[in-house]
Length: 506
Image (tube, rainbow, N blue to C red; front, side):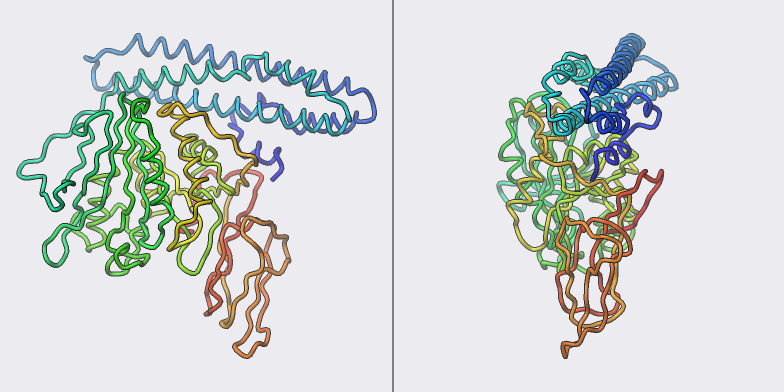
C-alpha cells in the first residue's frame, strides 16, 4: 500500500492541512531530480516548520487545558458539573491521542520522503535534513507521551472506579481445591503485585453443576488501566490461548501499571466438543450481549459480559479462521474511533480491516459499553502456530506499552500494514472440487482468476475472477464445495473510510 494512501486514511480530518504534504514533496522531488535539489530542500523545510508549529500550539493548548481541569476538580462537585468536567477531560484525552497519531504519521512521512530523496538524487540528502527533523519538537514525542501519561493519571485519580458491592449469600464454591469458583469478578479483591486464577461460573449444566470459564487476573503493583484479553469464543479457535499464557508468564508485576484480565477459553462447552459453536451449536458471537432470561447461549453470553468483560477498559478479542479456512494475521476495528484505530496499528498485523463491531458480536457489545475493542485474527483453527502467536504477542505488548502499563519499548514493524476501508467474501455458484489460487496477504487485480471449480470427473465447471483490486485476507482451503461456499475474503483499499461501516460478521 502506498504511503500517501495510508496517510490519507489515518489523517485526522480537522488537522489535514497541518500534516506533512508527502504527495507535494514527492512531486517536487521528481521534478527536480536532475538538478541540485535545492527546491526540494526549501519545500521540505517549509513543511516540517508547519508541522512543528502546529504540534507546539496543540501541546501548549493541551497543557493549559489539563492545568485548568485539574484546578477545577474537587470531590464535592455537583453531579451536573462533574459530567461536564468529565466530557471536557475526555475531549482533552482525545486531543492528546490525536497529537500522538499526528506526530507518528509526520515523522514516518519525513523518514520515507528523505529515503526516497536519497534514492532519486543519488545523494545523501537525509544526512543533511534528517538531523534538522530530529531537532524539532514534534519529532521528540517524549513530551507528548509524558503529558498524556499525566492526563491519564489525573483521570484515574479523580474518577476512581467504585468497589463492587459484595453479593449476598455464598459466592465461592470450591470445585477444584487450588482454584476457587466465583460468581462475580471483583478486581479490587485480588492482591496487587500477584497473578490470581479463578473459575467464573456463567451457567449450569444438566446436572446443576456450574459451567465455568478460566480467568487469569494479573494486578500490577500500581494502579492503571484494565485491559481484557479473550480467546476461544469459538471453541476451535485456539491460537489465542498460548498468546495469553506467554503474556501472563512474561509480565513483570513489579513494573506493571494496571490490571490484565485474561480469559483463555470463553466458549468452554464448544472447547470441550472441539467445535465453533456453543453446546447447542449456536454461535456465541451472534447473540451478544445476551439475555438474563433467554436461551442457554444467551444466558451464557449475558453473564460473560456482566460478570467479566464489563470490567474492561480496553478489550482484545483473539480469534482464528473457522474450520476449512485460513487467515492472515489481521485486525478488525472501527478505524473512525481513534482509540481502536491506534490499537489496530499497534498490533502490527499484516492487514487492518475497517469494520464497526457487528450486532451480536462480543467486540460490538464491548464498544456499546464504551470499551475500546478490537478483534485480532491469528491464523488457522484447531492448532497452535508459533509464528502468528509470536507476532500477535508483540502487538499486544505494543498496546500495553502505549498505555504505559509496561516499560517495554514499542516494536516498530518492518512493513506498513495494508489498511482496508472495507472487505467482503466471494462465494461459489456451483458445487464440485474447489481450488483457490492466490496466497494469503497477496494482491490480486480486477479480472484475475482467483478460483476454479471442477466436477468430480475432473472437468472444469466454472472459474471465478476478482471483481476488483484487493488483498487476500483469508481463504477457503476445503476442496469439497457446495453452491454458496466461501472462496476468499477480499480486502479493498479505498481513498477514505466510511463514517459508519458494518460489514457484518467476516
